Image 1 (cartoon, helix red, strand yellow):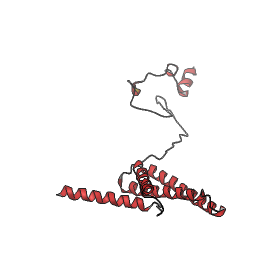
Image 2: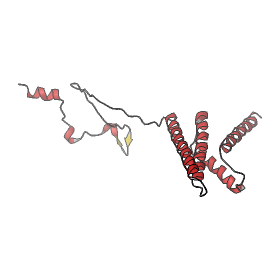
Image 3: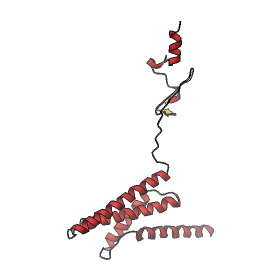
Length: 172
């Protein structure tokens, strides 16, 4: 009995999510039922392709679907052959704003998911006698059948001396 109640609750949540997404779409009464269904299914497909996890991502994904739909509507209005120059200009400005918002939403989603690009700048490296340093991308683990941690040194790099070692070799 408890599972049935949970299943019913899950169904209510999915129904509410569907209504939220449909309410974001412009569906004029002049559309055929087939076209209306196609637009709704496309919006749901866009939402599901974002693969939201959790409430925050779910809300953002729904907003992104709405923003995308509104931007396309503005572009559609700008392309209308009966549109005035002023109307076309206004529709294109609104489309531009909406597409900018969409890009910001996508960046926010990526940042929330930890996909934000990080950059580290190394300005000074000090290697003391007996020390080792690696500057650059370092991969650990296995590639193919070879363990990268057990890689052989590059032949011409086997006997690299630090400036201190080189100075000691030159000293009398």
